Amino acid sequence: MQPIRSMKPLVSTALALLFVLGFVVPFLQVDALGLKNPNTPFDDAQAGYIRYAIIIGIAAIWLFVQLFWRASPETTKLGLAISATIVWLALAFFFGFKNESNDEGLRGAVAFFTLMGGLAVMLMWTRFLSDEITY
Image (cartoon, rainbow, N blue to C red; front, side):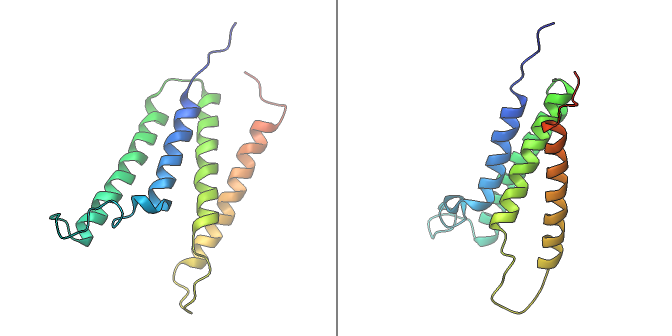
């Protein structure tokens, strides 16, 4: 029996990268998109809504790919593991855990869940890199 090859992990990876880039890349910010200038009818809030609508749309497409693209369970789990790794690494590298002001806010909670997410990512990759996977 020949294994079935699917593009689902690659599409899942690309969508996860687009999701992260929507938050991180400066040219996708409200000012750089040209949504907030005197010649457009958008104010700051509406321009931000447009940006986050695009990010939520990418997340919805990612979810639909995971739910409705027919592939083997191992292929789906691999796509989920890659996506979780990309989002976790972006959170760990780009979130401002150290703030110049003294207010704690939610930084401690985000740090805790980043550590727990790292544990989850490590467990997912341990499963894939072990020799015990049977098809």
